[in-house]
Image 1 (tube, one colour):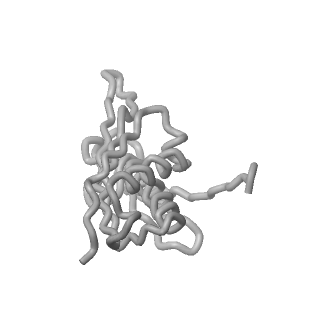
Image 2 (spheres, helix red, strand yellow; image 1 turned 30 degrees about the horizontal axis):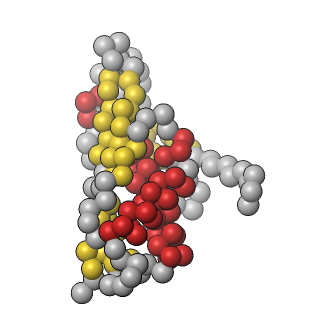
Length: 161
């Protein structure tokens, strides 16, 4: 797969025009649908701080989630290759976004806090799992594409009963 290119196509369709469209900043809804072929629509909106619907997914939330998903999928791949049997994986990820006085902004950091439950054995040490997290971070396409720190702070491993 060396040198392979992968293209991704997504349709984002604004659903919030209502009766007045963008007649004013407060006249329209930020609601939209993220549409991908053969998948259910993903209801999106802006962050509630920017007049968005708190019951819909914001781009910022999805961005932070994508970093966590990418890391998890690489970690599970590497765990399977190494002989570590993972029974459960959760990540309580946080991200910080700074907004400048004129309104533009950027993420300043994201911290992943993966919690792994694994079968007992020689591969289920905190050191081995930390090494897998380090390698997963190095492999994650999305983490490699951002211009801010993505920290990985694994919770000590728990062994499956």
